[in-house]
Length: 402
Ligand SMILES: Nc1ncnc2c1ncn2[C@@H]1O[C@H](COP(=O)(O)OP(=O)(O)OP(=O)(O)O)[C@@H](O)[C@H]1O
Ligand SMILES: C[C@@](O)(CCOP(=O)(O)OP(=O)(O)O)CC(=O)O
Image 1: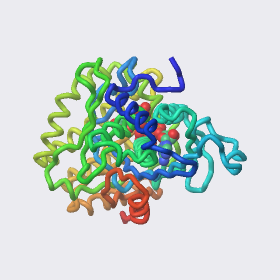
Image 2 (image 1 turned 135 degrees about the horizontal axis):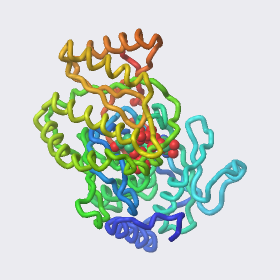
Image 3 (image 1 turned 120 degrees about the vertical axis):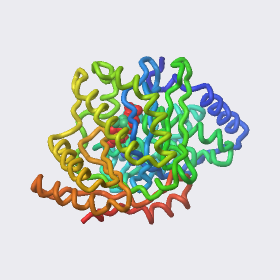
C-alpha cells in the first residue's frame, strides 16, 4: 500500500476522479502555472459528537453526528498551481513537501501535516506530478484549541482545489457535493460537516454507514424549526494554546474506554431525538441532549488508555456556575465543548443578559479576564474569488459580550 496516497476512497469519488482524468485528457481542464483557487469554509460545533473511527477504515466514523455551523469562525484558503518548475522565490523557501507549501496570513511557512500532504496528493492524483500547490491559508479564530480548525481548514482547502479545477463548471451539483464532502471527510472527519455549499446549512448531519462495508458516509443539512435561526453562539476562551493531543490522535484511544461502546450504542436513538427537537424547536430537549453528549464524550476521553484530558479545572468550575445561574433565570441557553477546554455557549437572544451575567460572575470567580468570541455571521462554504473577497471583508469576529 502506498502510504502517501489514500486508497480507501468511496466508489463514487473514484468515479469522479476518473471524470477529472477524462476531462484533463480531453483538455477541458488545463491547469497552468499561477492559476488560482479560492474558498472559505465555516467551522462547526458538534451537538452530538463524532468520537472514534471504524477500525480498518479510512475516516469512517464509529458514530453519526450532528453539528451547528459556525459561519463566522472561518478558514480562508487560496491555492496557487505552480506547475513542475518552481519560481525562485519558492525554491529559496526550500520548505515544500513535494506537493504543497502552506503559508499563514503573515506569510510564514507552516509545517505541513502528513495527513494533509497525503490528501492533496490523492486529490491531485489525476495530474501526476504536473501540479504542485502553494497554499495560503489562515483562520480568523484560534487554531487547534477546540474550535474545530481542522473542520474549516480542510473543507476550505478541498473547496479551493475544486475552484482551481473549476469543478463548479464541470460537475453537476450532486457530483460537486460528493466531491467536497467526501474529500473533506478524508482530510478531517468533522470537515465534512463544513463542506456543504448554499444557504440554510445551520444544522448538519453526518451519518456513519449502517453496514460498515459501505464506503460512503452521507453528509446533509437538517430540517429545523425557523426559530433556531436566531440562535446565538459565543465561545469563552479559557486557553488558546494548541492542545497537546490532537483530535486525530485522541480518536485512536476512544475504544479503550469502558464507556465508549455504551456511548456509541446510544447515539442512533439520540440522533432521532435531536432531529425531532430541532424540527419542533424543543429547546430544553436539545439543551439536555447536547450537554449530556459533551459530558459523555469527555468521559470516554478521560477513561481511555492513554487518557486524554482536554478540559481544565476552570472548565468544570464555570460550567457549574453556568448551570446554577441558568436554573435561577430559566434561561434558554446551553453549553457544549469540543476537544478542548473552551466553553461554547448557544443561546436565544432573550437570554443575552443571562450570558453576560454569567461571563461577569465567571471572571470574578476565576479572578481574571475571560476573552470571548461571538459568532456574528452566518454563511456556509463559499467557492471562488469574488465570494471569497466578499466574505473576507465581512467576516470579522468581535468580542461583544460585556
Ligand atoms: N486554515 C487551515 N488550513 C489548513 N489546515 C488547517 C487550518 N487550520 C487548521 N488546520 C489543521 O488542523 C489542525 C488542527 O486540528 P485538530 O483536530 O488537532 O484541532 P481542532 O480542529 O481545533 O480540534 P477539534 O476538531 O477537536 O476542535 C492544525 O494543526 C492544522 O493541521
Ligand atoms: C471532538 C470533535 O471535535 C472531534 C473532531 O475530530 P476531527 O474531525 O478533528 O478528527 P479527524 O477526523 O481525525 O481529523 C467532535 C466533533 O467535531 O464531532
